[in-house]
Image (cartoon, rainbow over all chains, first blue to last red; front, side, top):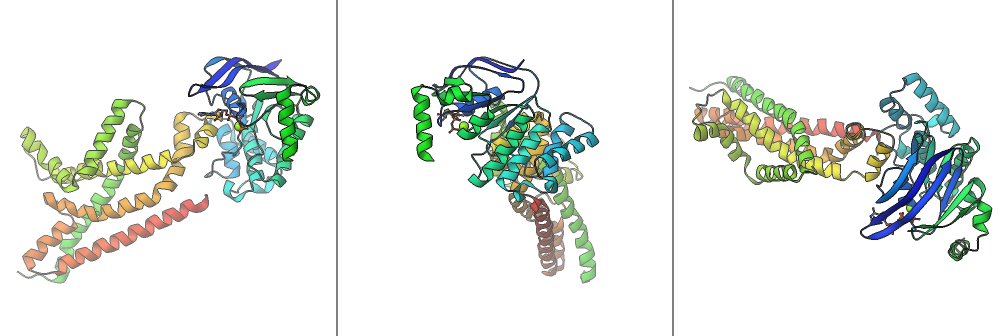
Length: 229
Length: 218
Ligand SMILES: Nc1ncnc2c1ncn2[C@@H]1O[C@H](COP(=O)(O)OP(=O)(O)OP(=O)(O)O)[C@@H](O)[C@H]1O
Ligand SMILES: [Mg+2]
């Protein structure tokens, strides 16, 4: 069953076409990784999929709720960790306090943040803040979770802890769409990879298919990355 | 007839109550009104935006003392409505509230516009309504950001209350001036000066502790 279906969406900024006729499907339990060079439209695609941008054309269908984890966390600085996680379930979903608190504590435990429930975001490391933001998104019980470069704002030594959390979610069959520059991670965690270039899907398939592709842009992209490392 | 210092002080205390009254009533009305004006100023509807802009520009571009007189004498000069002495307090409050609302509106606007768009996006994705987003997420952070500018205005307000003397409202300065000329004594004016100074010291302490209270997050 597909939880998300995007059909022929287009998006331009100031006359420049950033997304040119993009279609994709995400099935339940699937992890989709979106890779591609800077400026290729990955974030714009994700922002269209999560209603933060309105596409100029095409359609988007969802089943159920979705959550988004931002590159720069966007935690609410005036709320404690606990309140960041519980406020929306309580005030938006109007769920019972006990149930929400219990679930939030379980999420914090899962994120290795049991001892941080009363801390404020500024008191946490980037990696911890990102884990709180993942917990905040999960507390809404989304059917799909979107990530836009969840590790790019982090120091390299903190990247691993976030990737581990996402890997764990994948093993619990959480449906996820992840924009990432971490090729190894995409290779190992994704069921399906989309390679974007200049606003189009230039290549897609299983990790094996994509990483062994003959597509020149894809090869060029991977070549550049390996030179950087 | 010369009166004792004690008698002076007891007369001055009437003025003191007048000043403190103007001060709190002005804040009570102008802080919410200012937020409303700020919304108008940021409205997507051009005509509302324009009205708010003109309003702010007039309130900030003309003397408060003149505004006070227009509010007080306007009904009589324009509509020939007989004004009673009891309208004095009403006129003072109206003039101060609409004047200070304009200043607060610009402070609110600066604070609101300084908020990163990510806060709105995160709130929107979590399903908060527009009102919830503003009052739960945005506004509390705006308060922290604008508190130093608000403090400046509040300190100015303490001193501005003395402008009510323009329509002879019996606040501290009006009263002190009356006693001073009747008694040909500088003491009432000095006492008034000390009163304003102490009032502002208290305001500064209160605002500082408010700022400290909001320092629990960054
Ligand atoms: N709000 C906007 N207004 C104008 N142009 C925009 C806007 N958002 C994105 N763009 C442009 O659209 C293009 C695609 O941007 P996008 O952020 O989607 O790329 P990306 O693939 O996510 O890149 P990166 O890997 O650097 O994050 C870029 O050229 C960018 O400048
Ligand atoms: Mg991006």
